[in-house]
Length: 474
Image (cartoon, rainbow, N blue to C red; front, side, top):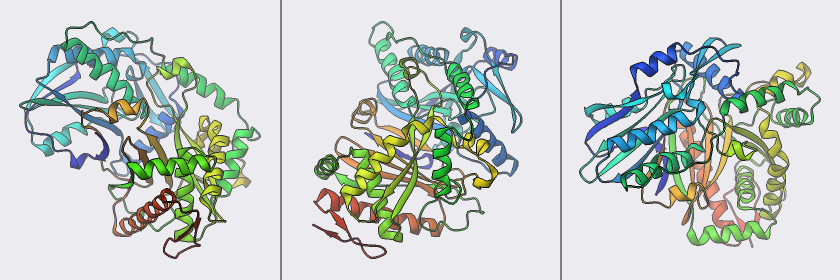
């Protein structure tokens, strides 16, 4: 089992809680860690600026990646301590903390020797579900130990949880945690030797390389020109969700909604329709999003940004950190044909994938004033496709671990949409500002999207024009 939900929905069975926190000695070592010449990545810089801006305005933004899964039996504390500390010491992303002086001066401090880092188990006793949710959501990105791990012990199993600042990791951490903590723990309690792992890369090396590559860009670099053109076609910034979201000058907590788009049979037929159109499943996903927007608004062009992993070398594939970049996607849907939309989406994504290494913040730094570019507005739209039917997510999704990813439900200003392909179905999950206008708009959007997917899977080819109920002509 696999799912994305809000932390409010987490209600583990009652039981004693053991949490691994940084030891006093480790905290002292971190406090004395010297300044490092390694710059923060662009992803980290943007995140720390947003966090500090929100904090200055008294707002609490989402900042964590939280995961849970279930393991049979009683937790072997010694074995779990080994697995957790091996993971933390292995990856340099956990070895730094940031001193935020101002938006332009963010200074990294790094613990030189990973052996000086130790997380120790602390008995928290019995916690109510509300106390447990408060406990798991406490790390913040301006503290070094912005990560912890724990277990809730029940009669016949325990629930493992990890709460890690997004500053340190990206979604690829799912497979890493599964291997380095779950499989390592299973090997140890089974009497086997520790799992042998390939040498990990260093996130600091990526940060240095990224900064050098971005410093070499100019306003005339092809990647920058492509981003400027994309933003110019979207009001000078990144695309906005196509339906009303209410007054976003008012802070709203995030709300998460998940619905099934396709069952197993229709998922297979949808993939065949994508292949017949000369696209992959992902092209069909963005093509359907374009057709959905066309039906709701009449727009003949659909634009969105989608997330992708920017790891490029074998070493980086073994590196834990924040590598996620954005790909601009533009889909022509004027003819209302799924084949055309899927082809257009696939071509746009494939052509734009190299732009993911260029953060939009860097584009804003380089763009000439006459380009009129600005930062994303509240209500910007980010769409992602996750294929949990193949590795590495399939190992987690197809297990019996009851694996869950949680959003904290803190202040949300954008709409994030994930289409998730699982072994037996395809789902959509949407995170949006929780107000009545946005709830109504997102509900309409999901229903239109579901209808589009079903019609494609059932052989529909041509979608009627805008603002009328979805109609497919075969």
